[in-house]
Image 1 (cartoon, rainbow, N blue to C red):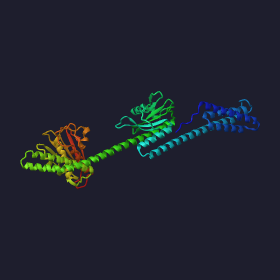
Image 2 (cartoon, rainbow, N blue to C red; image 1 turned 90 degrees about the vertical axis):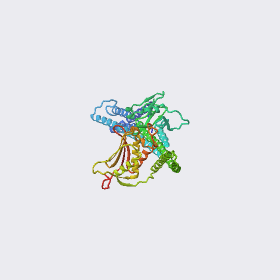
Image 3 (tube, rainbow, N blue to C red; image 1 turned 90 degrees about the horizontal axis):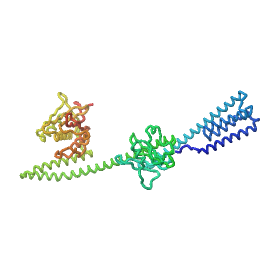
Length: 521
């Protein structure tokens, strides 16, 4: 998109002189045949001249020629000749009618020229935007699209160079993602680009190397470089109020932009911002894909190793049992540690099956009291001396849900054992079955140290152990992760809440069922 042509002062003076000579020649020619002309012929000839001159010149030139022709009309062609005196009142009507028509015609022609110039500029903008769209669609990679943006923007603004810079990983320093024309060797990032990214407003570069910030108010009004002293501009690229890169345009002769170019520059900057965001999203997608592949390989390795460990563990346990029968005192310890390692291997296998969606569930309608009673019976032998206070709704209220009894029992037992690990001795554990709208909830509360809010989601990640957990606390950090996934596989959830007065409350929810067997609304 080019700026409107600006004619030099010498050209304007030459054009004005040519128009004055043409007016004088036309007037002299009509004076020579004045006896054969009436006022209408003279007015028409002058009007045609003014219209012709207005199509080539400015509004001011048209108005001046209309005024000069008005004087010539009066001086040379209305009696008494060679004087500005008008004796016939009708001639005043002729003169002023001519002047009004000439001025109005000049205005119309000038406005039509301005509209035609604006239409041409809009056509240039559409042409550049269509080129930008075609280049973007033809670009196979997001990075190629940025190079197309830089090339089209440089051409549209008639700049010497255009470059698009993106922040590095973790919002690090800017790196050059695209430039037109391309550099033979990588050079340093311009200070203006770094400043624009840091302050979030356009930065103007001046020939002496100084930088000027564009204020927010001026930027919102479209204010960018408006004088030839601006050698370049660095424009921060935003998507949803977040800076995703910087667009920098330079021109050694001065980057003087018209108001229309200001607007078009901002439009191009918006498209460049979308291109920069596309590059970022593509990089995020590539990283997510790599992490997903690494996670898949990890699950495959865990499953393979777990299967391979089960056979030697079975052999170790069998040999330990034989030694125990022969009276070896260490055999019991060997067997206990083999059982512990076997549980760890089983957890690894279950985690890999859950990740692969291979856990089979048998959903049935079961009373909450049955699940709660089975869980208390399961942990009674492993928690000697620990008081567990269980509660269900009083009266005739019977809570029930649709879930897999075996897997839900596993989740509830894991929560009780977890509470036993972290609660001080002689402190009770509270477990309650309650209704939460359309959910059946089991709440397990302990008197342990609690979990900081920042850690409440991380404790459900596989193998995660809080830094403040004593090393003698058993477990590999898989229990809560498996419990949450088993809950979600049944359409439920597992969350952690802070207990008033200290401690933690794990809430295990499942789909509730009415007493008649229908799901509660």
